[in-house]
Image 1 (cartoon, helix red, strand yellow):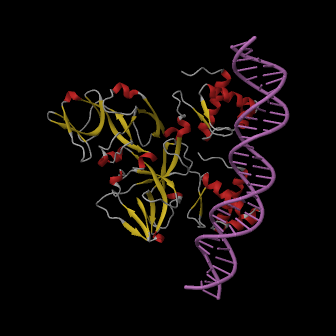
Image 2: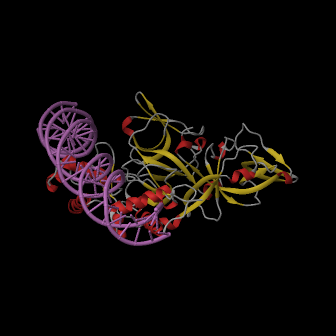
Image 3: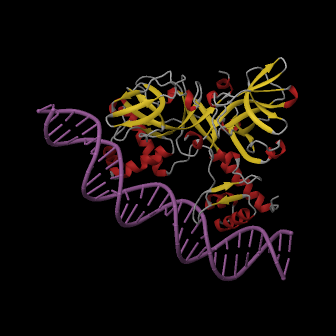
Length: 211
Length: 211
DNA sequence: ATCAAATGTCAATATAAATGTAAAGATTTT
DNA sequence: AAAATCTTTACATTTATATTGACATTTGAT
C-alpha cells in the first residue's frame, strides 16, 4: 500500500498527469513551476517526495524522463504474508532441544513458499557453497521425516549435530554430501541420521551479500 | 509474560494494529485522537502505558516511529511486511519502470531488507553461480545510479540488456565480472553501461532448489 | 563541433504546518 | 486511596514547502 500524499503533492501529481495526457511528455521543472506559481526548486523537492512514495519514477542524474506509476491495486499482500520461526543457530555439539531457542521470526511470501509449518534455519559455514547456499543464509525448510535421493535436507546426526547437506540413499546407509570440494561426503548408518526437513528455499539478506 | 492491558489500553492497541494493517503506517497522535474521540494528549499517555508494558516501542524523543510488538518482543509481522515489484523481462528500449513489464510483486520481511523503493529481478542464467546466485533466483535490489568497487549490481548494457554482475571501476571504463569460470569478464566504456541498482539480497523458491 | 539556451541539481536558508512532549489539574475507575 | 484516564494549554521538534542562487548537464540551433 502506498503512503498517502499531502494536498500539495497530490496537486503536483495531478498537474503532471494532466500534462502528460495533454502533451505526451512531462513538463520541465520551470514550466511546471510557472504553472503552479512556485519556484522550480520547490517542484524538484515535491517530485523527490513523490518518488520516495512511489508515485513517480525518474532515472539518471540529469535525465528529464519521468514515469507516473499507476496503482497496481494489489490488495492481496496481507493474504500472501506468512510468518515462520527461525530456529536458533545450529552449532556443532549443541543438542536439538537447544535449537528450539528463539531465533526470531521471518515474514515471507506465501505464494513463493507454499506449505505448512515451515521453519527457517540459519546456515553456518560454507559446506553447501556450490549449491548456492552461503554462510549466514536462511534456509527455508519444510518439516519432513524422510527424504528422496538428491534432495537437500536438514539432518540431525547422532541426535545432536544438525546440518544441511544433499541426501543420497545407499544400499546400506545414508550419504550426506556437501556441495563444496573442501568438504568430504559422510556416510552414516540408518540409525545415525534423523531427517528433520527438506530445504525448499533460501533467503539472503544484505549481510550475506558482503562476503 | 507481559502485564495485562486495561480495557482502554487494549482498545487503543487494537486501533493501532488496524491502522498499521490498513495503511502500513501508524497514525499520528491527533489522527488517533480524533478517531478515538479523545484528546491527543490522552492518546500519548496511553501510548506511554503501552510502551511501559512492552506492547509497543518508540524511539527518539520526538520521533514519529512506533512499532507494535509481538509477545516475543519482535516487531509485528504486519508492520514488517513489505511489498516490492518484480521486474519481469527487460525489453529493449523500455525502461525498467515501465509498469507493463512488471511481473507481479513479492512480499518480504522489511527488517531483513531495509530501504525504500526496492525491486526484485529474476535472474536468468548461471553467470553468478559462484556468488551463490542461481538461475531463476530473485535478486532483491536497491535502486542506485552508481556503484562502488566489487559490489554486485544490476546493469543495463547498451540500453537493452539487463544483467547482474560484480562491478569494478577501471581507469578508463567499467568491468562487469561474472562469478563463474565459464563466463568471461566484460569491459565497457562509461557510456555503454547504466547502473540500475545494487543487489542486496536473494530469494530462492522451491523451483530454484531443484537444479 | 561549438555555443547558447534550457533544464536538472544542490546547498543554504526561511517559514508554516503537523506532530510529539510536558505540566497541571479534573474526573473516573479500581 | 491509588491508578488510570481525560482535558487544556504551552512548548519543542520534525516535516513539508518555498526561495534564491550557483552550478552541471543536456538540448538544439548554428
